[in-house]
Image (cartoon, rainbow, N blue to C red; front, top):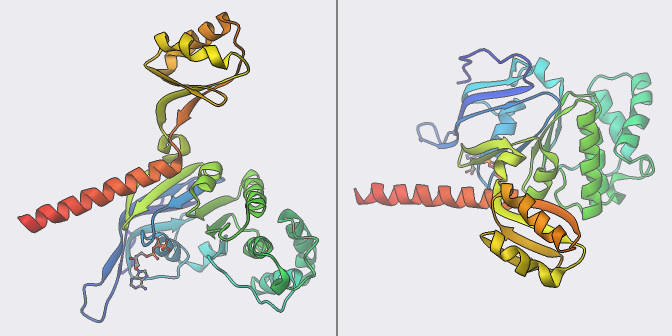
Amino acid sequence: MTTTTTAPTPDLVLEVKNLRMRYRKGLFGKGFEALRGVSLAVEPGSVFGLLGPNGAGKTTMIKILLGLAGGWTGDAFLFGERAGRASSRTRVGYLPEAHRLPQYLTGRQVMQLFGGLCGRSPSWLKERIPALLDAVDMTEGADRKVREYSKGMQQRIGLAQALIHEPRLIFLDEPTDGVDPVGRAKIREIIARLRERGVTIFINSHLLMEIEQMCDRIVIIDRGQILKQGTVDDLTPDTGLVRFELESGLDRAEALVTPLVAGVETTPDGLRCRMRTEETDRVIDALRGAGISIRAVSPERQSLESSFIDLVVAENRRTSGAATQGGAA
Ligand SMILES: Nc1ncnc2c1ncn2[C@@H]1O[C@H](COP(=O)(O)OP(=O)(O)OP(=O)(O)O)[C@@H](O)[C@H]1O
């Protein structure tokens, strides 16, 4: 049953409150609860990342938001309207995971086909298509058949297809999956340009480095529940280590700094110190005082990948511990 229990928050592009979804098994089976009370919000013009291990509930969430799955409870709004309504869907674009466009069409014909299906006139499309092909860097390959495209080109033409009707929100399910590093960088650039133009982007990806590079806000879910959400900075805390890249004096630096900090090691390009960030000036003064030039100083942060693994592993331990205790009781 899809009941709406609260009003949407004004100005949010997407909002989900206490979203629950149970896949039924048979007529009387208990089924499986894929989402267990998820709440999140997406601001306009932001890049939002949904992360989670296999089976976490990411696709289920996207299916609900696009109106492709029923039987959920809680609230889900797009542009302040209940998810699934045709009027909210017209403002949304979608690039599904492992999509397959008609292989016998050219990229330009794909654009014409999907633009026509969206109800756009041939004259409108005549102006829109070249601009869009240019935006996704596909002008050159536009008149070749899709079957001749590399994986990167297929993803870019897929992206153009999802953007044909000028959506204000676009869902990208694993947009760089199977694409080589150069192709991935291109897709990241396109996403950054879309964001500059005020399009809101909702990305579901396993490539955490990419999420770290692209997203303003991230939600990590596991087994249908949110483990953590916040900005990239919130999810990649300081490790308590500071790196000093040095231009000279590599042989003397460690001995100079050792009395000043809790721990220090020499790296190929400088020092890595365990210290409080407010001690940084003292170290800089000591190095400069000894005539050592410093190229860069940067606090070391935990990567999103290691933060993600820590969270998921801790959750696995917590739930298996709870199950063992429950079993023993
Ligand atoms: N139609 C369905 N019927 C029953 N269970 C389902 C159905 N679709 C998904 N599930 C189950 O719901 C859970 C969440 O699935 P979902 O596909 O949303 O996860 P996901 O995070 O997208 O995973 P992946 O990263 O592997 O694509 C999984 O345990 C899955 O087996």
